[in-house]
Each structure stands twice: as structure tokens, then as C-alpha cells.
Length: 243
Image: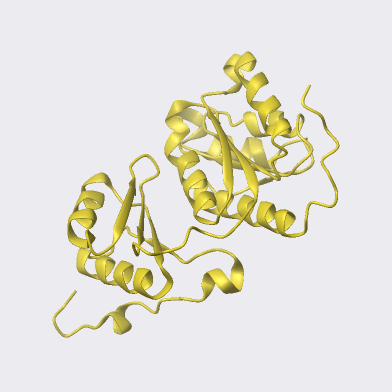
């Protein structure tokens, strides 16, 4: 940050976004100078108790920890490439929803973890299972049973390559499914494009799709659904049973 710059000149923080929309402001770390990023995190955590940063590479995570601790508690989520900075006295995020997060392959974990972390930051319990793609259908049986037994309000399904898993999952669960194509893949379909097209052309109603690698958007949307349902008292119980 240049000597003559102030934070107010470089970033206008939306400190009331969580209260207004149910989703906290998420600070996109890429292309931001370290000094600016630290200043944003400090101001948000001081004012609202917590600051959520996305797309934070491991080296930058370590630097943020060194700069901000011990004044703040810094939670580094390496796989998700996310950092949560909070005041030591900050309350846990409010919310009571339950969602599911599934990932087709181990290579899809960074995007799936983005969805998990932001949903937990919105107060949700996250039931997650990874490496359950369609190449080994038997791996999906127990995870789906658990999702049904836990009565999740929505399921985020992350898949690269051909992106078939969200369509299959929506055929098995009675709740909204949010498909997240990832840039895992190569060749004719290009990174993420084949998976995105497959999901957009799904024949399973109740499946919606976000952009390639947008785990944050999917996790936040699923958490909104779950928290709203929990707040309403869940008057309409899920009819499907865990079979």
C-alpha cells in the first residue's frame, strides 16, 4: 500500500453484508497487496468479529498468520485456500442448517473445501464425502444414505472431467443439488468446459449449476437454503427415508 494511500481509498468494506444478505463479505485475496489485505482483514475482524479471505495461497497464508497473530486468531484452510481471521472473543457463526458436500475425485478437493468452509462460516453443519465419483458407483451408496439420514437441506456436488456426478446425485435425493464443475480435466473438453456443459444439460430436475471452480458460490447458496429452512422450524419434513 503506497504511503499516500489509505484503506478507505482502496477498499470500501461492506461490514453489514452478513446482516443484509445472510452471507459475509468474502475478501478475494488474489492480486491484492499484502499490506492492503492485512488492513482489510484487521478492520473487518475488529468491526464484525470475523474476516473471511478466499484464494489465499499457502505462502501468503503463513505470512498472514505471522502478521496478524496473536492479536487475532487466524485459521488457515490450506486445501480450500481460505483464511478466517477472528477476534479472540468472537462468537461462533449463527446458523443451524445442515448441508452435504460431495466431491467426485480427490483432485476436486480444493473446490469442495471452499464450499465446506464458507458453509461452516455461515453456521451450517456440513456432511462431506470425497472421492465418490461415477467411475466407482459403489462408493456413493453410503454417503447418500448418510445425507438422507441427516436430512440435509441441500447438497453441493463438485466434479471435473465429464461432470456426471451431480445428475446422478439429484436422481437419489429429495433436496436441491448445486453442481460445481471444476477445471480438473484436459483435452477436447478443456478444463471445466465439458463438466459445465454436462451439468447444464442435465435431465435431473432440481439441479442448478454455478460457474467453474465456484465452490464459494455453491456453498454459500446451500447454506442460505439450509439456514432458512432451519429458521422456519422445518415444518415440512423430508419424506425420503435412508434405505
